[in-house]
Length: 327
Ligand SMILES: Cc1cc2nc3c(=O)[nH]c(=O)nc-3n(C[C@H](O)[C@H](O)[C@H](O)COP(=O)(O)OP(=O)(O)OC[C@H]3O[C@@H](n4cnc5c(N)ncnc54)[C@H](O)[C@@H]3O)c2cc1C
Ligand code: FES
Image (tube, rainbow, N blue to C red; front, top):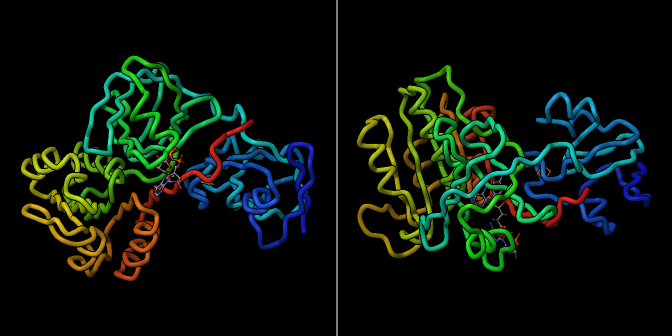
């Protein structure tokens, strides 16, 4: 049992509990999203004591040295005094330059950062509705576009997605975190086959990764399976068809898991159709994004089909458990 001091209170954390789960169960409101070390929503800092090295996985060196850590990965080994991350990463102001409807429920938000912002296609940002209310959205553009594109799906009663769909206006200045996440195309193996599977707005990071790979001269096969229950939600179909005509090593597959399936859509879940066809994934690089259950299941299936775990990148769109960043 370790003792954690947070906001003037002391919490006991058992040996098998993460600091995030334990503090939240005891009434502290620590924000979280992916709960698996991917999104950095739960970033905290140890003001005294040293957080376990495993809780600093994926953090920049400068943050690690200042004892920042991810609460969802933190199984404390000593007593700590902790605080939320306030001020660790300056926010970047960005102007809304375009808003477009991509489907009934998905809106394109095109942004122009008003400060330098270096990102890799496929990473994600935190989009702030207000100072303390934010959500993660994947970047669908590539650096040479010189714009940040987000695909935001309207969730029923969704606080931030509702605001994006109903209130956000062109020319409005909003704030973004710097880019986060490790799911992006890395050059150097242009012949490696790529498999991209996404559901719904899970197409966003894959669209960026695909365009990035093509612009970097990827020559190996690239297969993109995009899935949804309804065909009208398979947005960007014409653009993807066009890309597949110009790059004959890229194949686009639109998969509908509901009942209304007509040409050119295929019937079935995107991941099922992909794995039925590709039974040997040795040597493949795989990107999975969208519905968290699909991402988790597909990771396991890809691994069992021979893909190396380090070649599988994931962006599960888990949703935020506590809505404020605090600090
Ligand atoms: C790394 C990462 C990348 C992401 N990228 C994108 C992206 O590119 N595009 C995108 O649209 N979203 C993306 N998300 C999800 C996004 O961050 C928000 O969680 C989502 O927009 C809902 O926020 P909200 O404030 O509208 O809903 P909330 O106010 O947080 O939730 C409202 C209600 O909807 C339910 N809910 C929220 N989200 C879901 C869901 N996905 N499935 C089922 N029920 C849900 C909640 O339980 C709640 O009842 C990503 C998430 C992560 C972790
Ligand atoms: S990194 Fe901890 S909730 Fe995502």
